[in-house]
Length: 138
Length: 138
DNA sequence: TCGTCATATACGCTTACGCAAATATATTCT
DNA sequence: AGAATATATTTGCGTAAGCGTATATGACGA
View 1 (tube, chains in turn blue, orange, cyan, green):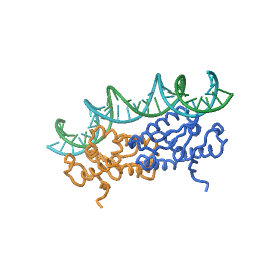
View 2 (cartoon, rainbow over the protein chains, first blue to last red; view 1 turned 60 degrees about the vertical axis):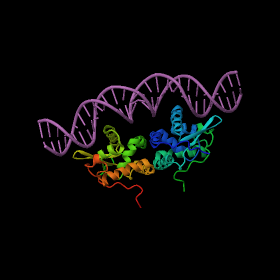
View 3 (cartoon, chains in turn red, purple, blue, green; view 1 turned 45 degrees about the vertical axis):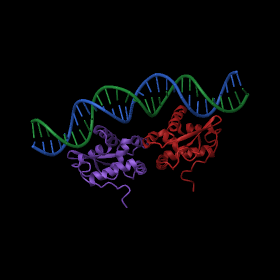
View 4 (tube, rainbow over the protein chains, first blue to last red; view 1 turned 90 degrees about the horizontal axis):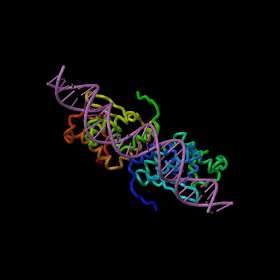
């Protein structure tokens, strides 16, 4: 059961959103559980940088981590029952109008649905939930 | 005519929202034009502090200022036609669920609709547009 | 036990931000 | 012109945040 430890201050929430790397991470995390190795691969940024930003999001209480063997999986820790959660989720919805964010999601889709496309991580664990498809192929 | 000078980067927008004073200012500005003296009075913060945060919002392109005699009036500079505008406006909508933000709006209502309540500014110019009433008296 | 892989943290540095106090600018009034 | 009012900007200082590089931790396999 998810403890509502304490309401997240709006200004603090927006601080967490005030960085493009963190926005991209949250975009990928929303709605599923994602392994760190996907973040590094898809964002194309150094591992310490990704890890540092994930730590920031963890400290803020926006995401939670779960260890599974060597891998760490991150997931959302706030739902739309809190004001902060609504702020976060509705903001991500708008951000996904941007092609760059759609592209990140598409890469995540490829990575878990077409293993081998991202060869360097084709041994990594699958996300627990399939990423929402952006502009589904209809 | 409002020039769409350049799209506001989402991370930059969220930086502007990452401060409680600026959130309160934006809450008051949205939907009308407000004189600086109201900000100082309602937020109960020092004039230089208010001015500094207004300057920040101006630099970011979120608000615009207009001089009228000795007074400066601030208004929103982004509409819901831009992604940043949608992010901003929908965020303010959620923030107004909070009593503190409702209270600020109520004080603005009093200040312009019942002159004399805030005696120290009862000589100040009226907001151009009446503030949206929060929880209208039904 | 050792080595390796996956991830996290520490360090040193630089830049941005927030605040209070002081000062500057612009406008109106006399 | 000079004083008063409304607002803006500067200065100095402390803190938080970002980055890259280097190092530490934790889990697994040989």
